[in-house]
Image (cartoon, rainbow, N blue to C red; front, side, top):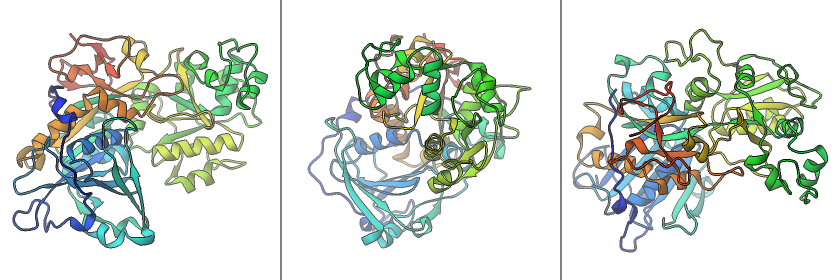
Length: 512
């Protein structure tokens, strides 16, 4: 697999200017085939699959390449399509004026690897079926402004209800996105020889625990007392301030007041099924002292990232790349398909298991919330784009005394992140051969290399500071002067070997 360097000279891509237009609706899709020509075949279809963490970046790209005011987003669960009139920054396929950007996110990163390499069809939304079935009570329509007071235009969002099969047709994915390189997902046809893989961005991961454990750690580590936590949780002001300097709840959720877990504690939690908090030196104060683990399924890039750089376990997928040898595997347990299953399994007096394999990040969140609500303590796996809130039931901790922030990654102190992979099919892939597709792919990569796009992906700061996704300096041409402050979402370190091959087992190294 080869990696390429890209340019970040994208001012033109960010400044979309077009005449007023009307939002295209699904019934205006008239193609009779995917790449057909002639009458009616006036839409360029672009199909992407894989990691959900990059979906906000795809949205930022879509609203920039679409003519302002022309975009509809149709969605059901983790399957959606942006449909619009192409703007001046995108080179359309000859004979087309419309653009349909499809994203299949079911299964996470895994769907952006083997299906792309093996040319395995995936059930994408079909605009013709959407037009026929996503109507009336089956359609919930809203207007969305993706960046508030920012420069990006609003679009129309339509959430479809009912069985997914009403809206989908199998089609090939041309572009895949994964949180780690393809080899982490196990063997594939030709050992991924059909893929061209390129680094895309960095994603920061943390140690999310239930709120009750976060507060227990704060007390045990002398950051705040039980009385101070109760006052802050009730909206009161702390006088005197907590030992960590907080005078209110916002302060208790800030970086200075974050408790920490050690690497040894985390590895123990993630590998020893049925472990107790007390056995790791943590006084949970809970009647049930069991550590419950909310993880992801094996096709998840988040799960592979945790196995590689956070838990430091062997890869749970047989035959796949592993950063650790002769180590214990990540704990595994009951599969959780959706939020209803998460509620039933985790929000119970006696949880269904000690470990839960969640279909998506949403189910990890739901499980941790349920565990906290039912008086149990848990730890999960989440990237830091997920925003903790004052009223929420989960919290990120520090790892080894270091917070998961842009500043700590940029300084080189925080290593719990991965560099994501953009995967396209070689040879017969339309993205490599058909006019219009290479230009779109370049535009997509350039947008992800733009800190302004990354800011949209992150959608604001965590309570403990800026975190989430970072643009990779190593992909810029020329490589900018390193900024180790984290003042902007740029990562001056990379895991590219020789500047070309991605290896997330390697620690980040400086670019020069």
